[in-house]
Length: 164
Image (cartoon, rainbow, N blue to C red):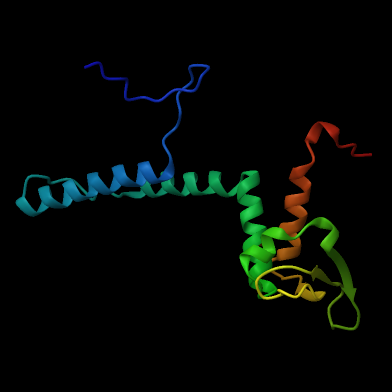
């Protein structure tokens, strides 16, 4: 019986990289093997999950977060968290459903809110128009308004932008 090669390839011949889950499975296996060897006194070396492995895993996680799908996931999570809505509602929002609003007299120089009009979803089965609001957060990592800006910025290809 003929067996194929273990390395998977794209149609153009380039190698397909391992997914994060596969890498974690390999690391878990090696760490388990190390702990068994350490218990038997066969391995005098340091721990298997050292700083280089942690840096490698952090790099994989950052690559996942910095792609367009990661931006959309972050936007969906932050909107559903800030507006207390279901992920079905957050994923179904379109740009026409969103508007920005500057809130006056809030004690800070500029307070921007993101307002969403919702006419669908499990919690809105009768099609009534509901409005949800998300206020700009001072931490950029937790700001739904900033996540929307980043998502919109990367939807338009760079070559079509005119920065004049």
